[in-house]
Structures are given as C-alpha cells and as structure tokens.
Image 1 (cartoon, helix red, strand yellow):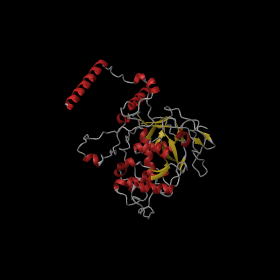
Image 2: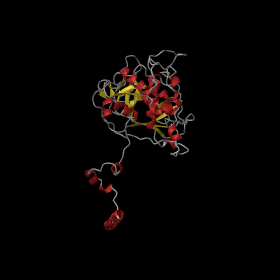
Image 3: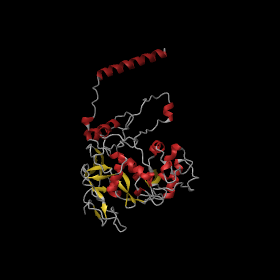
Image 4: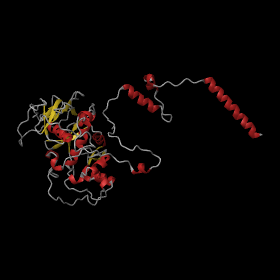
Length: 416
C-alpha cells in the first residue's frame, strides 16, 4: 500500500491514518529519507524532518518512509508563525492532499501566495509561541479543549500539595501508576513535558496564562518554578524519558491520539519498538504543553545554514538562561560580559569518525589518575597515541645519584 494515496472525505467511518503494529518496522534509508521543506522564493531549505515507515490499517506497513501531513504543516507553522499549504512545486500548483507525506522536496506556501517572502524563528529560544486559541484544535482534548470559557475557575486536589518539585513528581507518578507510553510498572519517573531545563523560557514566555486554568497548579509554585506545574508532568519509563529529552522522537496528534514519531537519524531499538505507539495521557495533561514540546523537537530539524539563508522572524526575541546567582556573586570566577548567540548543544545522534572517537577515548585514559588504556585498544590505535619524548637515561641516573649523595651528606651532618 502506498503511503501517499489520496485521503477520503472526512466521516465518522473513516479508517485511521496510523494503525497499531507490533512487528518490527523497516529502518529508513537515512539521510535520504527526509521531508525537506523549502522557501518558495528564496529556494532555501529551512526544515529537514527525518521520516520512517509507518504502520497502516490492515496490519501492513507503508512502502515508503512517510509522516502525517498535519505534523509537517504544524511544524512549518511553528517556524513561520503562518498557516499554509505544502506543495511539490514553488508555484503552489501541486498542493499535497494526501494524509501521509513521503520523503522528498516540498515548498511551504503561506496566505495562498507563493511569492510571499516570509521569515522564520531560527531557534527555540527565539520562538514566541502562539496564543492557545491559535494552536490547531487537534492538539487538545475534551478535558482541556482549545477554546476556554471567559473565566475558568475550579478547585483542584493538587492545590494543597507542596510546590516542591520532588513532591510533585512523586504525586504525579503515584497518580499515573504506570508508564503512560508502554504500560510498564517499573523503572518509572515523572518527567516534564516542557523540560525543566527550560524553566527560564517557561516563565519568560508566560506560559501558564495560556493553559486551560490560567494559573499555576498548585498555586504554591513561585514564578521561577512554574515549569513544575502538575499539568507539565507525565510518567514514563526512564529510558523512554531520556530519548524524549534527547529529541529522538516527539508526540504528534493523529486520529485523536498522540503517537510517538521518531526523528532520530540512527537505527535504534526504541524506534523499532515504539515508533507510532500511542501515549495514554493523564487527564491533567494540557495539549498546549504538548504543542510546545513538539516545537522544541521541530527546532532540532532546522539546518544551521538558515542563519544566513532565511530572514529572522520580526517577532523573534531571544531568551537565554541566566547565570546562577552563586556564580554571579563569586569573586573567584571571571565571566564574559556577553552570552553567545547560539549555544552548542550535544547531539546524541551526531556521527563521529573512527579517528576522532579513538582520540577522545585515548585522551580519557591518558589521565594520570585514571585507568590505563587496555592493551588491545593500545595496539589497535597505536598510530593515534602521541609518542613520549625520548628520555636521557644517563642524565637521569646521574641526577639521581647526585641527589642520593646530597641526602647522605645531609644525614651525616645531622648526626654530628
């Protein structure tokens, strides 16, 4: 079955786009298996999404690597701040109407105008998220829908809970009971939807007023601790949490469910087991936060050359994590008077050549206080190991003898 077959008219009987599938999915042919989005007038690529094969209704798998069209449109809207369409050509004549988009080159066209020279947000720290009402409806649930009443007020069992993050995580894990991605009952942790490391961004962008209940839950949270809001916590197995935090996958809404879509560019066991698996979200989870987490992963798919090829969105305003107060007050540490425009982040999927990897390992074992490099590695990597300078043994022996003679003389004088 082709992944790019035309969609049927929407109806209650319409089969799901993505189906549950328990067999191992084929690995994509990376790096060629990407949906590459280009600007129609600049001819510059600004979003390259790695895609994988997807399970389809009827216990079959897409014959090509693909991704739901809605996920691509949402990603483009995150970067541009504009609704648009996906087209095969830069004139917008071949608009994509299929439910699933195959790997290949596409153009994002906004306002039905292929000549519009739009700009993008270049990084997550630059990004100003849209109002709740402007986020696509598919991200929300019947518990916390997109449109709010004018004055939503309610009491919560969480209101009397301590604002301490460890207490909140323990309460969330106890409430969730199992990993909400796998159903596992062990090796669990309550993790943040919007990562805790982005606490400065969460408070700086004033996220809480955009939630269904526009105040912190519990209300004992300080402004700097709003990222620990109970609606921002979900229980996952620790290994799945780690890959989520490393942006190996993101959750996207499909057919009323949130599914895990893997965008890692390496073969991995997690992707073969959990790609397109459904999340069982706790009722407290607000879709606006899942949309932000989706955007956080989208920015990892923006190529670096966009800094020079794409204009910066006029609403962009950079937020940077402040220095810790202890560092600012320390008289012993000197800091630059500015912060760099871009922070180099560790990419867990980055490829490293054999020579570089060998040199890194050799450097680690060269620490005088650490273990010695194993003999088999030393033999295999001999050409990478720096040669020790030749020692003048005669000079060293002479110096040692002179020093011993001096010590004996000092000892004799002491006894006299």
